[in-house]
Amino acid sequence: MAERVAVVGAGIAGLGAAMALAGREREITVIDRDPPAPANLETAFDTWERKGVTQLRHSHVFLGCLVTLIRDKHPRLHDKLRQAGAREFDFEAALPHQLRDQYVPTAEDRDLAFLFSRRTTLEHVMRAYVETLPGVRFLTETAVRGLMVDKSGNVPKATGVLTGNDGAKTIAADVVIDASGRNTILIDALRDNGVTIDEEKSPAGILYFTRHYRLREGQDEPPRDGQPGAGDLGYIKYGVFAADNRHFSITLAVPEIEMSLRTATLDPRTFDAICMRIPGAARWMNPERAEPVTKVFGMGNLHNVWRHFVHAGEPRVLNFFAVGDAALRTNPLYGRGCSSSMMHAHILADVMNETADPKARAIAFDARTRKALRPFWDVIVKQDLGAIRRAKQEQNPAHKPRLKARLIKSFADDAVGPATRGNLSVYRAIMKGFHMIDTPTAWLRRPLIVARVLAMWVTPKPWKRALYQPKLGPERQEMLTQLGLAST
Ligand SMILES: Cc1cc2nc3c(=O)[nH]c(=O)nc-3n(C[C@H](O)[C@H](O)[C@H](O)COP(=O)(O)OP(=O)(O)OC[C@H]3O[C@@H](n4cnc5c(N)ncnc54)[C@H](O)[C@@H]3O)c2cc1C
Image (cartoon, rainbow, N blue to C red; front, side, top):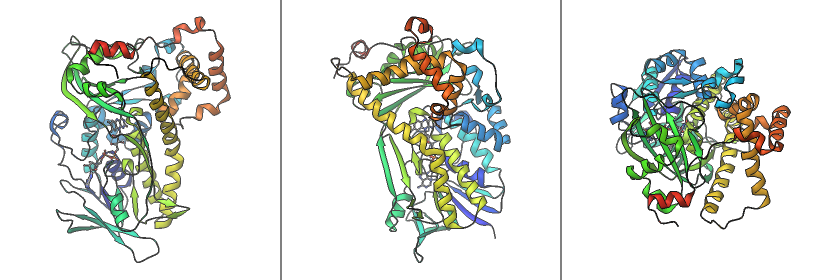
């Protein structure tokens, strides 16, 4: 008999799970609270109401890991994305300008391409693709309100979901996949059924502000010739996100403790004024080159979250699998959530294809999730705590960093940064971690790469001057004064 799978949520993880699981003997029902996709991409961007995905209209970049999965496992979707205007920005195109002359391609560079696309475009095309897959049906405008749980055995078992206004309708399933994102209600539903789900949570420490722009007629994207499209000024971080069909967006990430700046950034005039003072952003959004096409979207309450579904080798629940943000989340600044969700969905499908035993599935899924994704989570949590400390220090001009902090900063600024811009092997090794093709610290276990970074550290500054980043923008005090904001 066909295995009945209820996938709650048609975001990246839900669509990823459906596409990874389809094609076997399965009846897959993808259930989403939001309306179906509008007819075309521009309507999707302008008006697709997605209350279930609050981050839909924030900047998104898609990493090599996601592109590679789509290219290798779903080639028809890969073609459709290109036809829709999503673009791959390959390894060579992304090289720092200092490395362009020494570039020698290798086979692995293929996996290190970004996908430039608005989030709405990616999701629109993915949804249309999944709708064509055998055994998959969609129920839209259908909110899941609860979980059906069989508590008769030693370990509770999910047996379906509850929908309808009062949760009175049932959808029975052999497997329930929670892909309902950061605001999942199913974890609480499990807890209400007596299932303990432990959770680790750590702050991202920032608020996100995004505005979208479109290149004007006859204008092109600025050349990638040295002014970085992303950077950290200490009191603010910025990123330019190229997208499809002449669209791009800019995100400003403001530390939570920057009270006056965070309030002001939501105003489009202030947002643009900040961008105009950051050369790497200004060259994109200046009014001669581009026009804004949206308001400024703001988002807070950003955390790194990891939920545990297995404890001491024993599953807490059977036939229930959380994928994507419902299971784990990271600070959006690192651009890893969709890649991680897609990878997670494919890990689950591999496990489900390998065994039908509920306990073996739960244990294998947990172990493989940890192996593939936990290294990224751990590094991000550490980096965020460091960034929160630095943001506090920015507010105190008299602060004198300790020796350890000075060494860490020097290692980043005088060793890793210049080595990445000056040596192709170092750049490639670090980008493999960045694109989630390798773990983020794998390069630290490669003696030759570490030797090159250390050699760069001891190289006198004047010899490596061309390998430093240009100044990213004004100091904090100067920016606040220019914006007319009182310093706090
Ligand atoms: C500000 C911001 C910027 C980000 N930028 C990036 C980036 O640049 N690159 C990147 O890779 N990731 C980024 N991310 C992370 C990325 O958006 C998420 O990791 C990704 O969307 C997770 O996918 P998901 O399918 O798990 O959840 P979602 O995409 O949130 O999808 C959840 C789905 O479940 C549905 N749903 C919710 N509740 C119910 C319910 N009760 N019943 C039925 N349906 C329900 C929703 O309608 C939605 O369709 C960003 C996140 C944020 C917050």
